Length: 87
Image (cartoon, rainbow, N blue to C red; front, side, top):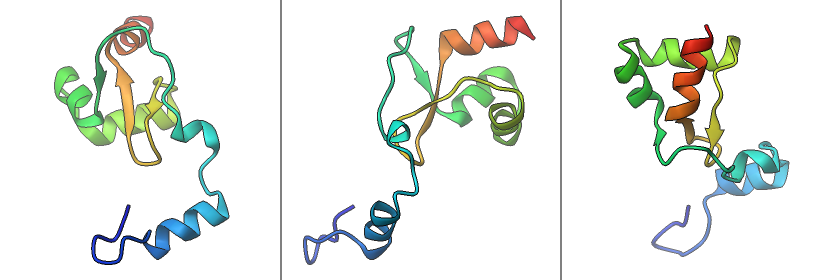
């Protein structure tokens, strides 16, 4: 993110880039089967559970997630339906 006053990147971002904290794949969008990608809160609302539950499913139960950036996880709606049905 650019600092609007100086036009330079913020120090924290420079450190993250320099340390290469996030693997390259996390920054690239992957091809998905459906047209709709859901945010975690949207998926939670759709399923009638909390966002914390959806995050737990991602971490522990293998709910498929696509990362559009280091802090932008998205869930493909069709993959979500398939994952729920398989459970």
